[in-house]
Image (cartoon, rainbow, N blue to C red):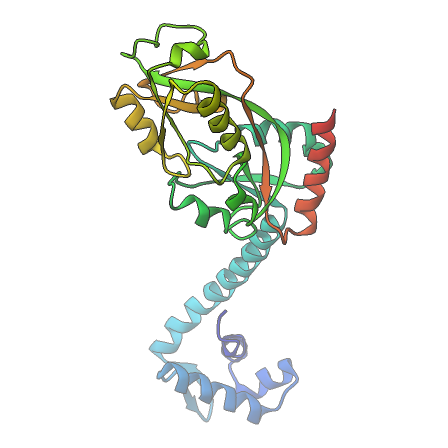
Length: 297
């Protein structure tokens, strides 16, 4: 990182002559003089007064001499720190975390698996839940994140990454605290007759398509309103600010303080698990295999 001619400069200064410095560095005096001439030219400074009795530092040379050792030492420490950081990166799993895709399930999994990765640490990388931006975040698997964890039944998501199912979340509903259903501990599906249910449009999720088909066929008194394809906070806000009912998963019960989450007596659920790059490195694949064993127990 620093100019290596500074090493020669320090030796020349300490020796007090080009000849003695040449003997110490096992190169010719001419080579020493050429190096110092080059250094002075590069710095646009006169570093030495050359006299018959020897060489002496100029005031500018004195400043460079005082700082050169610090610069060399600082450079070596910087390179050492950089190498350590590179090693740390090699032994760190980066896990994305957001409001709707929190890293807590990954942490629960990690405590079962970390003994198999004794040199590894976790680094949580926050990202925003945005129904337009989430796809760009998934594309960064293998670059920005090693893993994301969350609900995944999206054909679009699964076309961009690999997915290891770890379990299923129950589908629930959420309503504003002023809603007529807010005081109920359990919702019967008939309680939703006459209500407007917010859910993602048809076409990207087998689970949500199945739910929509069932509701439209067997419970036509429930009106359905499309949300954006991927939920974000605006969807929860709309539910909190209207009389709408929101179809949601049990892991989102604390997302919005203005909403009440209530279980429903149906058998709807959706898978969640690990998302990782299609070109994942070996250590990520090793973690996935370990997670797979845990999920089967």
